[in-house]
Each structure stands twice: as C-alpha cells, then as structure tokens.
Length: 249
Image (cartoon, rainbow, N blue to C red; front, side):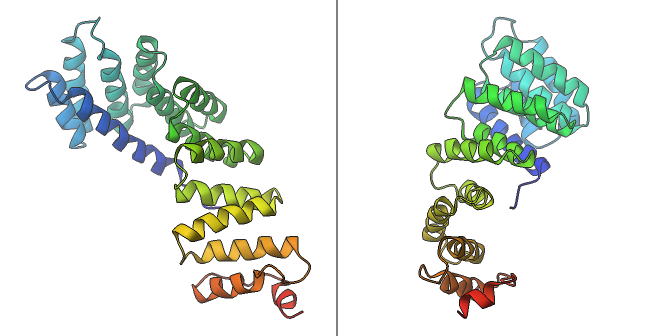
C-alpha cells in the first residue's frame, strides 16, 4: 500500500492552517496580526515568528482569537526547526481552547516528527473527539494505525473518513488494500469497484480486484483474468506466481 510520507502530510496541513488564517484575520488590516499572516503566507517563517510575537503581545488576553495566534506561531517555529518552541506554543493554544481539532492534529504531526507514535495517536483521537466530522483527523489516524500494522483500526478509521468524504480516492484505495490484507475480499472488491467508477484507467485497482476475485472463486467465474489483463494493458506489473496457471485453467 502507498502511504503518504508524514512529512508530506505535515506540509499539506500547513496549507489548511493558512486558509484558516485568511478567514479568521481577513478583516484585521494594518495590524501586527495581518503582518504576521502575510509573512506566514509567503513562507517567510524566520520573520513570521517575531511578527507573531508582536501580534500576541499586542492582543488582549481575553481575545477569542488568541489561541489561533499560538497555533500559527507554533507552525512557523516548526518550519524553522524550533520543535521545542513549537510544542510549547501548541500546548498553550490547547490550554486556551481544548476543543481545537486542528491544534490536536498539528501536535500529532509534531509527535510523529519526534517519533512519538503513541502520543500522536492520542492527539489524532482527541481531534476526532473535538470535531467528529474532521476528515483529516480520521485520515491521519488511519495512516498511523496502518504504519503500526493495526489493520482493523486502520480500516475503521478510513471508513469514518469515507463517511465524511465518500469520493476520496486515496482513502478508498488504502481501505481496499487493507481489506485485501485482512482477506476480506468481497469488501475489497466493492472498494475497487468504486475506485474504477471514478478512475477507469487505474491499473492497480484492476490488478488488486482481479487478485481478490481469484481468492473467492477456484475458477475464473468472476472475471479475475479480464481484470488482470486490463491491468497489464495499463502498465501495471502483473507477474505474480500462479496467476498464469489460474487464468489458463
């Protein structure tokens, strides 16, 4: 199964946070917050950190947006390599708002960067508790369960994510591969069917659906060989021992 490297997930999350900045601070022109935000959006994190220092120091402690500033500074610090400072800021953020799902997700990312898988899993779980409809929290948790080889929990987490966004091809493909690993071939076929409806030129999906069919029927009554043939036409490597014999029976 192709798992997105956590660094790429981390970078993708930064783009999500950037969108939150734009929405939350769009009306605050000419302020320290706006200047810090502009530096953040331009990825000038070295200058963004002291700019967020000024924004935080100039913001009233009772300001309802204060916790977001700590998140943004935490992200900026992490991009400069200051993981310790970033961790302190995200903890402050969560003290100010213990129901902020994005902050738990970000802290989970930090824990992964520091090889603390159990802590990361706890944070992703807290994110889903704070915001049950947060697609990304379920995806990150599912990916981590997969890395930990807890395939049942990974499948359950991908299912939660797909209930929120049924057309996410990557999540669907990962769950299909997990069903295959768990020898739940009927469920795997259902997912590969769905993938091929969205991506009819996906050779890997044809190949895996074909393999799943071979485990259900002793002879090619389900079109397994046709799937494998189509996968080969699309450039997928189909050289698996026993397939040729199965298809020539």
